[in-house]
Amino acid sequence: MDKKIPHLILTVDYELFGNGTGCIEPCITIPAKRMLEIANEYSAKITFFTDAIEFIKMEQEKEFFAGILKIKKQLSESVQDGHDVQLHVHPQWMHAKYLNHQWDLDFSAWRIADLKQEEILSVFEASISWLENVVRSENKSYTCNTFRAGGWCIQPSEKIVDALQQVGIMMDSTVAPNFQNLSQGEWSNFSSVPNKPFWLTDSDVCSETDTGIFEIPIATGKISKLKHIQVLKAAKKQGMAKGCIGSYQGPDGKYQVIKGKMGKLLRLGNVMLDFSTMTSDVLIEITKQWIEKYSHVETPLPIVAIAHTKNFTSTSEKALKEYLSWAKREGLVFSTYTNWLGVIDD
Image 1 (cartoon, one colour):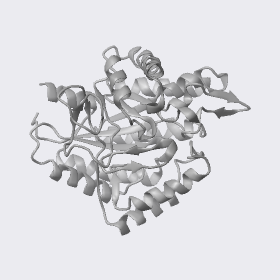
Image 2 (cartoon, one colour):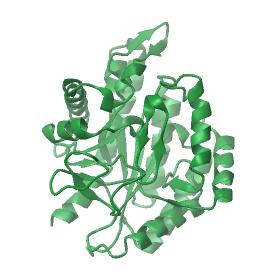
Image 3 (cartoon, helix red, strand yellow):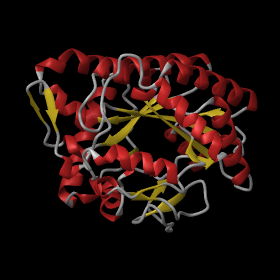
C-alpha cells in the first residue's frame, strides 16, 4: 500500500444524549445500522466510540435489558465485519440512578478532566473491560486502543493521558483544531495545537512531546460564514434521527442552549468534518483542505471524520453516500485507527 495515500477514518459517538434523555433504538442502534449499511456499500469502515459506562449502568436496569442486548450484538457484529469499537467516556454516568423512568446523572462529573486520578482509572478500566467482554466473545483479536473524551472535555489532560497509558490506550482522538467551548461546565480549548495531522503527547494533548500516546485530531476546516449559516439552518430543520427525542441541556442548565448558539455564531466558518450534520459538498471541501494542508507529510495522513447516531437523518444518509462515493473515486483508504497505526508501524 502506498504510504502517501490518506486514510479516511469515519468515527461515530455511540451514545444517548449527555443528560440521559433519548431511547436506545431510535437514537443509537437504528441510525447506527443505517450508517453500517451505507458504509458497507462502499467498503468503508466505521469506528464506534462507545460510551461503555452508560451501557454498564443501563445493564443494571431490567427496562433496558432488550436494548442492551441489541447494542452488544451490533457492536460485536460490526467488528466481525471489519468495523471497529473504541472507548468513549461521559463520566456523568458513573453514579447515575434510574428514578421514575428517567435518568438522574451526576452533572458535577460532566468533565472527565475534573475527576480524581483514581476515578479516571476506575472508569477506564471498567469501560475497557465491558467493551472487551462484548467484542472478544466473537472477535478474539480485538484491542481497545483509542479514546475520545465525552463532550471534548479532555483538558487539563495530564491526568487523563497518564491514565490512558496505564490502561494501554495508544491513541486519543478528542482534539478538534481551532475549536473551543468556553462554557464553564464543559469547557475545552483547542485554539492552539501543533500544525500537524498527528503528534505524540505525554501530558498536554495540545502540545507535542517525544514520547507518549498519539493525538489524532478530528479534521477541521473553513467555509464561508454564509455557507455555514445555511448548513446550520438545514441541520436544525432536519432535526434528530427519525424517532429520536432528547435534550442537549447539560451542566450549565437552561443557559447551555443559549451559550451553545452563541458559541456557534462565534465559530462561524470553522467546521468539523461531521457527516451527520454537514452537506456532502462541505465534507468534500474540508477533506480537500486537510489533504492540501498536509500534502508534505510522508507518512499516511489520517483524516478523522465525526458523527453522532442521534443526529443521523435521511439528509445525513444522502450526504454520506455522496461523500463516500467521492472518496472512493479519489482513491482514499477507508480505514480505522488500528489499521492506520499498523501502517505507521511498518
